[in-house]
Length: 354
Image 1: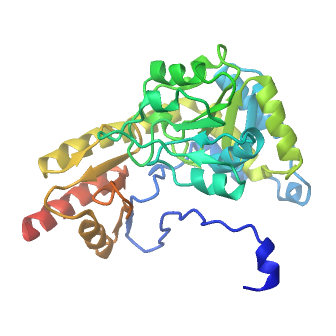
Image 2 (image 1 turned 180 degrees about the horizontal axis):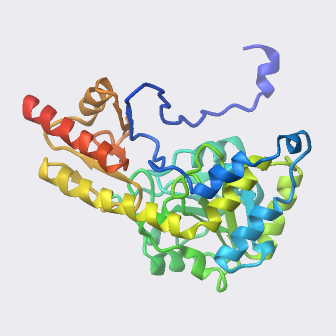
């Protein structure tokens, strides 16, 4: 090791899902929305004045903040936006988790949480999910430095009910509780309704999944004005211009078209429920997902074998080679046609190999 390497901040980075680009592939591995963004998004991007790109964007992202505030019925001072919910969550870790006590998040969950904790030197503990892959409320009713709960959880897709979330929030008034709602729009109940009661609650959501804008990188947090003020102080100490002009325009138009938003959500939910029925017919077991993916396992065919076979057929799903979940596949919900092709492949493969 070179002498200068002793002072390098080292961590094991997050591993994102594959991003293949092959003709006629079926991409069900990164929980992207299979439908295009709202029509107004395309129009806004087409009409974007290229000359404006030589100037810095609005550091306060006021047009997008206002649209979100109007949509959720909160004040502008309660909204924070960033470059995807990853940026918002990382800034929240940096801002709010500065105790010597460990923060808490599940052992099976979004694998960026421990990366940020390691990067920012935040002590942490990961209470294990129970035998049914559910978060146990009692594990979070204790002294800690903060809490992060993904709801629905990933990669399991299981939702934790609002009453249990409230018990955690009320039981930890001295620390910030972050509810990461990346998948909440696909059938869950948001914790936003609890904001008036708890000043220690921060709710984080994203445009990447339900609003079809993963490529634009837009995330946001909603909380009380003091929490958002602290987040903005950290942001302006780190990078004042986090949101580019194109993202501000696209995000604002996506928020405006609620009818399109609801229509595409319902399509995905309907396709998810149909896929559950078909997977059950083929012998798969899976958890009751409230997200835009299904976490499924087959009792007779190893998940890694299926993962490789699907990949050879240009159907991409996610396989996690980790304890307790290494016989599960996380399958994003695509279009009806894509999910039909997946089921036909599985039907043929299982029929040939079992």
